[in-house]
Length: 481
Ligand code: F6P
Image (tube, rainbow, N blue to C red):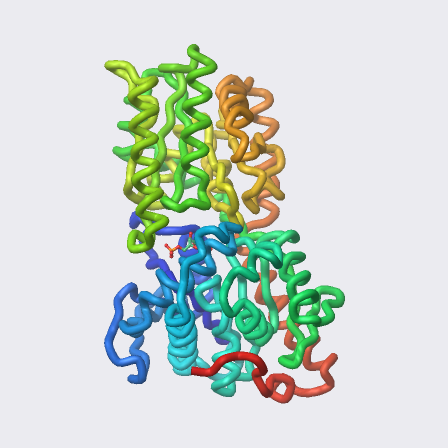
């Protein structure tokens, strides 16, 4: 099999480089070992959309990494515009933040079409395409338009919201119809998969039976594949990282106080404002925790050109400063707030140093920080994970302390409880979560998806009574540009 993996952001094989977002970090080790070609954006743009897409190719494990300069005229409308100011807020149920234009949508479609043209270069006998995430919802349809008949799978790393929220995205119907050109659509949770199926039934009037959507494009299988991590490898990295200079300095600075850690992109979906309010409330109602519990919040700036992100950055900075002013002492800072990224190896050591992991998004597809925090713990003296019940990870890590991130008092109480949790209970919770992580690794996720993609092709062809290239003919309702 010649596997071609596609995502907007890609990662290079250096464990010590900061990586933005869970997708790139999660995919790197499995793509490296699979021999796949991983195709994505170089992060640069280039003039002349109609020119042949240019890819720079380098070795990546037993496979290769191909990065493309995306068309300059459409990059802004695609990335900051449609992908991150229409789809991202909607997928995270923030319809109030949707702000886009017809031009953004056309640019999004242009970049999807551009990527499809670029992918043809990697197509050979036995190719299977695997598209990642919301940047490329229309890529399957664009590939079909170019005559591609091979299996094409898609995995959504974010949540999929209820129908009335996704209907807030201009062109939602065209986009979901375009998605039905994928043979397999994977989701993080059963809730996301059910929401998608409900939309397809109600808005498109299609039948979904046993997880298969039957449409004029053929058959599309909908299935849940919760993404995992390599817990044992991460645990090993955490034990080693304890001697890293940043990690040792952090330990020395603690003077016996307990540390809570949060590591997030500076994104409104991560619930940072509510989290800081909860710590504020915790110190206000438990004066004994002043000086004895502090927070290290790493918040990596992201998507700075979008107004909502700029506003959030100012709001969080102001709030941290207020809380530090209110509870700080001459020799104690309640919240250490860092706006930079760290490599996975250092992060593993920071997680192991912290007695409380705080992962409290308002909505999150999975959230791999939650899983990494657990895996990084010292089994003899593990920390406590405080986890939003609205993160996909809460479905699996149900022995974490689950919180409602909108309930500030409730979160403050749970944080105080986490700080006081006895060792036996911490170990019991940690062991249950670690078992779960080992049973559903990133390697399993990768293999399960590829197997289902191969099966879905066979199922689809057999049920349709025709070859895949005959099922995939006209593309109705999809605007061509
Ligand atoms: O869906 C999740 C994800 O792909 C993450 O990997 C990352 O958090 C985000 O979306 C993309 O972020 P960015 O815009 O920085 O590439």
